[in-house]
Image (cartoon, rainbow, N blue to C red; front, side, top):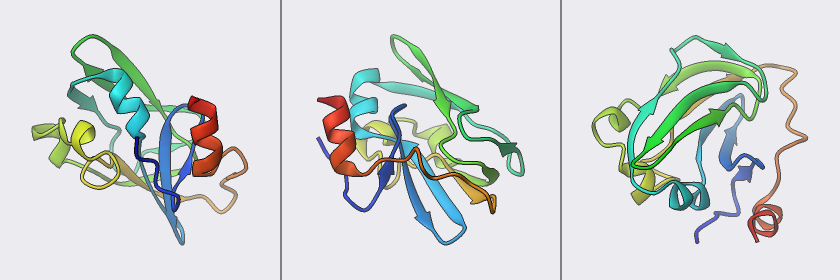
Length: 125
């Protein structure tokens, strides 16, 4: 499985790429493999704000529906609308074309619960 070392991860199986005040968020390769074929994603609205741990959307796979949890406090500035037409991109390329949302981080966004790739790999065994 692929877990890029330049990303941060959560115990809820999201990945985060932070660039200044902007964080790009998606689900991990492990998460997409556990879910199976993804057929639909429900996203928040642009300009909607979330706290760390809030549910910000859902992923529907052939056999299950799963919540997505916001890993950091911030405001949604962009959603990956391409996934409305091609949700399978999350299965095929979760770290590039399969990203889900971009948020503008709050000044006080707590990053202490994020873990590095090595720790995430340990977590999933």
